[in-house]
Image 1 (cartoon, rainbow, N blue to C red):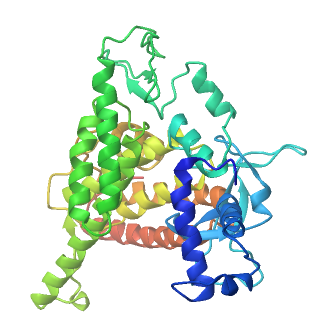
Image 2: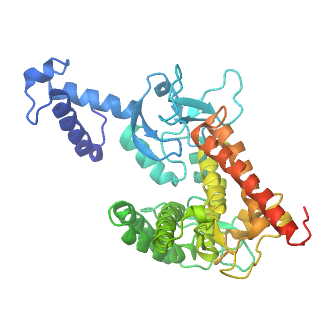
Image 3: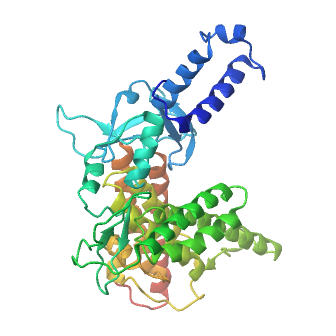
Length: 434
């Protein structure tokens, strides 16, 4: 209690008042009513709130969206690292009850030797070091000295807080100083080892503007999504001139932008379905509501860029990777109007049928993507979903939880559609390869 930072006093006070009102069912809880719960003073109430805050977990749905707070005395014993070897997840949906199973699970995402300490991350590991330290100090009252935080002090370029090397053909990164600190070190690229001539203040100003835009976009996300979309769509091009997509706040802005794009796509699909119904066309007639290919590809491109950055920041096996891949795979399954534009390929048919990793690399810096159509699109969707299933099984343990179940269903649907596509093309007298 005595070590609480001043920044947390207001939040803890509000939580204390809310708890007091809740357990006494009164807007003006009396000392007598609180004493029935063993709370005999403001200090007792603050102690209870402090213990809860330090030992609770963010409760998420199977797709990792925050929906509340959970408590597990056993899992709370696990210490922190910004390079965790385990994660706390809630892989099952309440719609699929598992009798006798705990909704909270601790899953190893790396090999853990006998006697080695199990470590989870208490904070979002996509944040730069100074923000992780700030969160840990304010909520848990300690300063992290894990290997990830120590490496930054060595001058190693951390993709979460770095600027791009401006030299043509160089994809190297240059470490950025933490906000509020003066750095007299030369800005040297980690790849070409050349000193940067970029104006550091311009880069730091762009990062500050990006953080402000992120804060405002998050505030508008639910109530005014159009305003949130305006912030993300305007800021991402500006920020991406200076920093890689792995850097904060660009990665966070990109992930929020993708969420908003998916919502817009869902609304467009609903509007198209309504339009068909208004025209007297029903699904029984065999007509399918299809969106323009370029509209869907815009969202697929955002999803691919997001995963390309996520795959750098989050270690293999982390559930965030599996969920991001599943999202891209499902987007590739959306029915598109094949005649909306000419079929162009950033991704070759051979790549589409084999390794989706190359897809993400080729799309990371693409300004306008054009994914394959027809059979090649189905091949790509299937292979992305297969990889998503493998990632989900590792990140959530067992069969991969509810999201993996949805991915399994998508794989079956894609394979069924693929067979139908090949049959239609064969009947048209075209040669089928692959």
